[in-house]
Length: 639
Image (cartoon, rainbow, N blue to C red; front, side, top):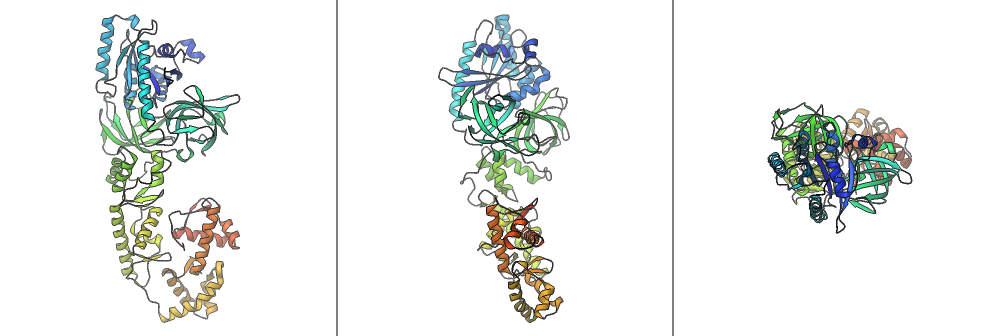
């Protein structure tokens, strides 16, 4: 369990930690010289049954609230300190606001320096604190009176912490493996023999010596990976550490200047950064003014803080004490998962404004205030991932990207039984709700009927063109999934890349049949090189314009493949090229490059590029840079 202190400067936070643990958390020379905490301090407390409690001591100065927030993020239990002689002070109130807006509900109020106050004064401070705590998550927190100077109440406070730690230990066992590993870095340094070491609070999952982890956001662009050399959790060497522990991680393959406070150390599959996140935000009741779209704020998340712009999504202004759906646009990418707590301070960093919870770390650039988007965000407010996904499938007209959904939830993969039965899904890639499948099917049928009516001499559009006609916003992966369902149940017919209604057929004329029969052996002989329309006309003894028109019509019927204008391939040749492409992709991690296809087919580089670009158009592959990635969800040219 991680305990964090909070409270006004000089109210005895560091002194209390020393009385509890024997550790002076002021480690910097400047801190010892001035007698105040400047940076985060750390100590550990070991219970009688061996339970270990990590303690984060935060500075109380008004100019160091950003450091306090970095320390408070990720704590399990808060100790809000108030001196008996001073009573509640400005940072007492602001730190209480921070704890409340971060959603910290477990804590205790500690009245310190009781040796300097009379019983009546202590009772007066207790009453002031009860009034201050009303309507906050800590309203029912116990009040404990202590004196670090005399030791009065220290044992009671220590016993309170041990009791809370035992409860926490029982609860965390059930949830530690629910999500991937992630640690919020609040310190980085190097040690002889250990190399680069980062420390922080583990927010989720577990880590073992030898694991490969990644830093995000990356300091120099590309995500940096490193291997765990050794671990120290709760101030002792361990082979494994898990959520709710303070942890020091020694890393192999990472330079000291590549890591720092504000970054996350996470499982590589879940180490991503975002430039837009959607959240549910509540404005602190003590604020005097409403928040409006366009407001510039300081965004705190985990151990980082960054300037950001606020956009209200479901209202025009956010009144004090109210909540709203918002989009936050940080000036630099930050790491975020669903459920992360965010805290906003004003642009001048002079006061705490609001706090909330991340709903979607992949906030959209467009359509962010539409009724459709608001329904999706409402679905993401459900309690657990299974409920969120079910609710999202009910309202998302374009389906749900399952891989991105799992990433946003901090999950390596979705459980096999998480999808509701009526949904159309391809495990790990995409899912579409039953109602949305029916609506999309109707759109496809209407688009095909209109196409057949307008162009009766053509068999149908190719699959990519039909997507643009029927469902232009549907992702290609979801489109392939839908098309496979419609073809499988006979709703539509796939003829090569061409799609048509079952009742629609196009008959060739006698002349076209003659040309098709003459050119078929020529196309077969052309093999991977394909054949140009002019050459086929010459070799078949037919008119070039007539051959060109007939071949184009055969291509539209799916009986030939027109790779580029006037260059045609036989269907079995394209099937063999597709099989080669799949084979190369299997050997190269799912990617194919022109040089690899060129070498496998003995073609020129230009022809290999033309073939791969054709496969991009029909949906077998998709281009990313100079590579063509095989679509995992496509069934094109499969035997």
